[in-house]
Image (cartoon, rainbow, N blue to C red; front, side, top):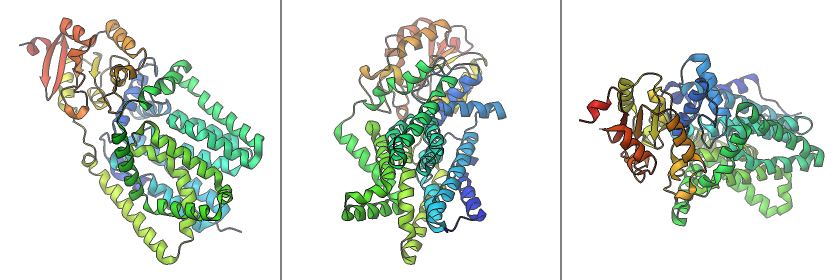
Length: 487
């Protein structure tokens, strides 16, 4: 009979899921622009708006509803709340990993696997490890899905449902569907595959309860080609891939080394030896494919690799000699310390301009019901002003064709995005248009608002410009700041 994990083991794992994110849980700063972008959608929901109709992003619906729920509970759009929820979800997933692995392989393997899982989920630079964005919310759901599908039987349907929910938290988990269905087929043939497939469909279908189905499908899948295939040079793509891969391997050295040793032993034993855990290798490969989508290799993209990686690596590390396991503990501990300390200085790895001065100026010149239009990709400002956001788009990349920081061709623009933006501005003019193109760190230098074929004439005809810290604030006629700005 295999030895199970103790209650103390499980409580310690759960506590670690919070402690390793403690600096982020105590900081009200946005660690990642995606956090603020999610909050912009959540704020629209809280004001009675509809996801994708009144505020759209090329992202799934569960995270905005999480921010909306936190606002309903607390009255604030504080990123610490969703980070707390994400940490709690991770704690549940870590406990599930430990319990499930202990059931089949014993306590030692379970603890190594679970601890690698917890630390791997934070072993990233702070913008990726401390935030609560789509990837962090989807990770625990997908982990539970993988465990349920591997267990087999009736819980396979529940695993499929959880995978469907993971897709509603981050759509790249759709890459894992073939691995999930295929893994179930290996255990129970068509019956298992059917259970998983039905569960996935049921999970994704829940999107219809959260947003108009056609809008969800368009923004999450149909329109994603502009993001995935936005142009970049082969050299830049390879350099980004090499740098991101090297950083991930360095911060997950023990798990990656164990995986390499396992792969080498399996190759030496012949391809048939991979059948033992073929489903995990399939999940790993689909995770790598999702990480490489668009050739951007953002740090949090690697989280999709973590569940199969640690499930494969944990048993290997558990079999190492006492000396090598001690070294592994030292490396994992050092990595965890780095990740926690790095969260205390998030700007050291990705500095974003502060929206404070511009937000104060807008607050001085507008009322709580006045609408603000932000031209560019600066959701932190949209949250700092606490005003309804005009234009129905989280950022302007959908209009310009700029994608994931790349200066893409205009044919990468999202179909219909410009028309809906201008229709919204015509129906209810904004009190101020904020042009971010003068702030180089925000990447909109190639797209000045005044040069836009639609916004330029609109601003010139009815607005007065004012420059502030690189931003240009175009004040509508009649607003308190319009007269002074024109002088």
